[in-house]
Image 1 (cartoon, rainbow, N blue to C red):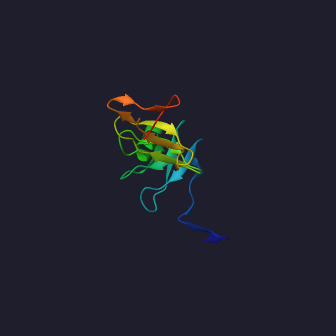
Image 2 (cartoon, one colour):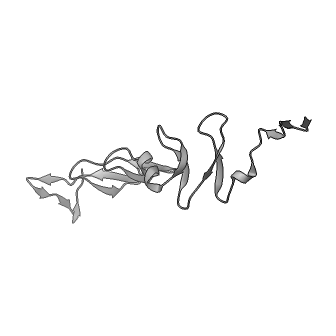
Image 3 (cartoon, rainbow, N blue to C red):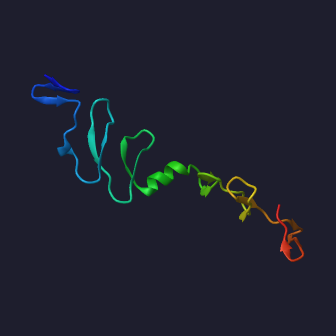
Length: 126
């Protein structure tokens, strides 16, 4: 039996999702073809899929682990979106650098025989 775009078989609507599966803060997901399931998204979580995993509500830590792959990675922002700024070399530190993509640059101080070089009271950087 069909009525409009609905298809019935054995007294059940084919292709429909039972609204009884859904509570507040629940979405529909499918980890295997043709097997929709309800996923409740808890507070302070985002929906995503970690490598090799299933669709889930992820913690902030899980999201950060996906974004930052190496020790010392930082999240900075370029002109439009967040970007990863990789760690600098030992002894370097961050300074503002508006001409760089993220607005930040790793620099080291210029030294001469162990003395920090300055000019007009300002430290000189590499």
